[in-house]
Length: 337
Ligand code: AHG
Ligand code: MN
Ligand code: MN
Image (tube, rainbow, N blue to C red):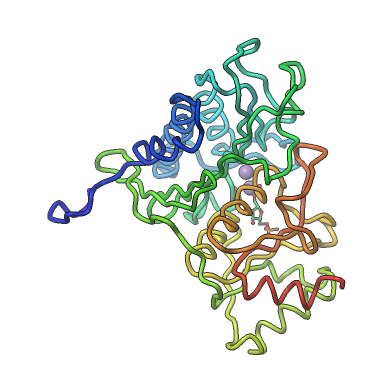
């Protein structure tokens, strides 16, 4: 719990959401009820992550997901928990997950279903077994005009600029939830003693420039050549100082550092992933939304990420996200004129 002698009020994420909900006239509590599904699910996931090693939750499940990637047991657990918690919310009509091939229709026939939630239940799977931060990312979309209950894809195939809320949770040295409903970015740290997310990072602004770049440099031989030159440029000092590098391999954790400390995170096209590796709907879009809300930028190498019209739910995209100074320089130096 926060310092009991402090005069600062303790604000839980639930209280905060109720205030923010005023931005959605007529939503009559359904939006906060929806978000409480996410907070509940991520508390259950973090409890499992914290006990990894004690319970039989580490390691591979033995199946391959729709991306052709090996599923870890925690991937499956996190997915099931999110689907379970969110299916209980009548306001949600469609759920789409990294771990499911197709979007799922929930509450079939309910006229109260106005929202779709898209998520990566567990980001950074390769780090689970070695006590390195992992996370969950989510994006919330409103049911588009005229989208029927028979066409769940139409609910989610919307550009990121249509997100009405987005966020993530990092299961790191503490558990932190960061979200935005389009009115700034706010962070809440889970107080494990009371089981509540408490406002710890109000109105986060991304510094205009940082010290680090973050990219898997092992693939640099197959990056487009201008990316390689740009990274050299960061190291050279032309932007005012010589950059260091940090790469965790969990996008959500690498982004969290970039959000708080500034800098740039890149997942460029590579030989094996010619469109980049990260998924547009549930990885790039939420962090792009948060980056912009915090004063940063996110592009796919040329275009604003939030302007991309998706045509499939597991579509991948290159991602370059971070502070304004680095992104403006990237645009000048790398993007075709
Ligand atoms: P996921 O665990 O959801 O499949 O995502 C892993 C992603 C992302 O978190 C990270 O930035 C990236 O994979 C790391 O990929 P490389 O190992 O190719 O660098
Ligand atoms: Mn992921
Ligand atoms: Mn994942």
